[in-house]
Amino acid sequence: MNTSTKKWLFTKYSSLILIPFMIWFIVNLVEIYDSEYAEVVFFFSEKTSIFLFSFFVAFAYVFSALTISEIFEDYIHDEKIKNVASKALYTFATIVPLITIIGIFILSL
Image 1 (cartoon, rainbow, N blue to C red):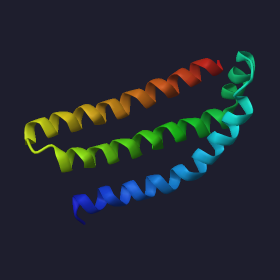
Image 2 (cartoon, one colour):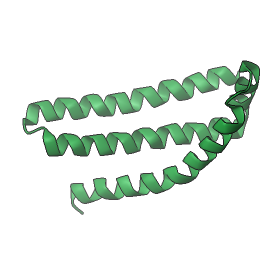
Image 3 (cartoon, rainbow, N blue to C red):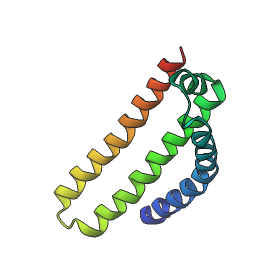
Image 4 (cartoon, rainbow, N blue to C red):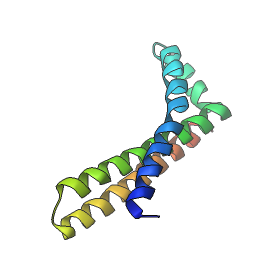
């Protein structure tokens, strides 16, 4: 299978996986929007919330990295710049979700 085909499939699958996570997140965001700090911390301290939010963040960053890398492929013609931009993007898309997930786990302690 071609690399471009794999990227396209991963993009489509990750977007399908994001739909239920996005619905869950929007429903819960509406519920905790006007809540006090302690209630928000309690929400993110529950095991199911941690689990679902962690997957939501991970899949959101995978999806965004895949779509942004396609923009790099289409609009950056210099191979060196394209490689540096892609590596920086994938590094950013790995580090930020990890920091977010670790922060949520620390918050729940």
